[in-house]
Amino acid sequence: MQKKRGRRVLKRVLWSLAIVLVLAVVGVVAYTQIGVMAAEPEPLASVRENPAITVTDADEGIVLAPADGDSDLGLVFIPGAKVDPWAYAAILQGLAEEGTTVVITRPWLNLAFFDPRGLDAFTSAAPDVDVWGVGGHSLGGVRACQLAADADALVLFGSYCATDVSENGLPVLSLSGSEDGLSTPEKIADARDLLPADAEMVEIEGASHASFGDYGPQDGDGTPTISTEEMHDEVTRLTEEFLAPLAP
Image (tube, rainbow, N blue to C red):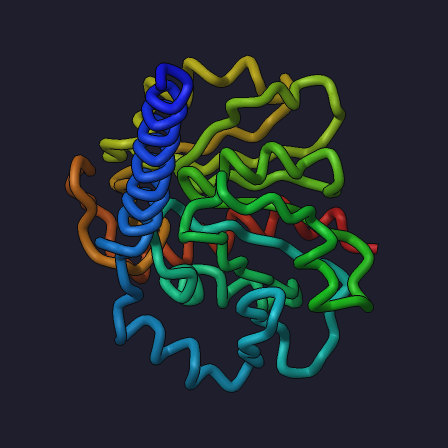
């Protein structure tokens, strides 16, 4: 009798643990799908109508490439947490116009930390490109730092590394915003020692966290004082100047 009672108690405990686990999984999945910040329609429309580039919705991600097909350089770009990948197409299209193939990834469950794929899962979208940088915005930049060992350069938009890449000799560009309320100037300064000593650190005056994408205001962020057009132009100029010397 006592053994039967013990088995019943054990069965109840196991069922309870199973229910808790299922509820936890459902909760995490629900969190990743609720409140995803959508791409703003007008900037996205400008990308789709841009005759200077091609836009391909590929298995590897959203591919922006020069319309003439002449590209020796690529950038894999990882979105921020719960941000629609299409929200970065407008701010990155200028790079494609200048000859860089851009692959914007689609992180699993909308969170880069849940995506274990390596860099080659995305560079395969453009097999003729041999030189690849990796970059990202916010949490996507943190994930980009983890993939940097397999890349030729690292680009951070409103982000910083949580892993130490200071000794790998990689060229690094960090673009931040003076009005960023999430990846604040203080947080970026605190993580500066994880980057190489010669990393290019550029703070864009008037830029907020959400200025690095086109998905509208974000909770906890500062108020931008730079226009969308100025922001796009500045990011294109700085990133293109950084990546251009890497082209074969």
